[in-house]
Length: 139
Image (cartoon, rainbow, N blue to C red):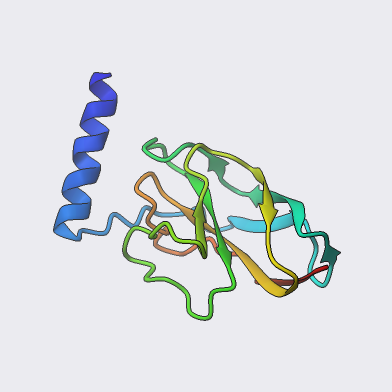
């Protein structure tokens, strides 16, 4: 509990002062979609699996070199500020528990998905680990 309290306190100070931690990512790190694939047609509720090479996955709040956790960017026109904690919105979904897959429900039509790795404080790494965006069609 003491370790958690210390990390939480550090996170609060970082957020309140607007300080960006910007952890360093492994230079060869890549994040990608295992499923769905670019151009795929899916049902309204579908499984999304995240892939990561060159780094490990750890829950938010875990300070460990070469790790991070996934954020799913849905239909974003502009990338978020890469020097600040990522906000949790309908378009930026956090997987701070270290999850590597989810079930997603989207309305019919064309959607874009992109993955972005965040550090222990939800801040993208100094060299962002960002997937190529994919486009899917929801029936």
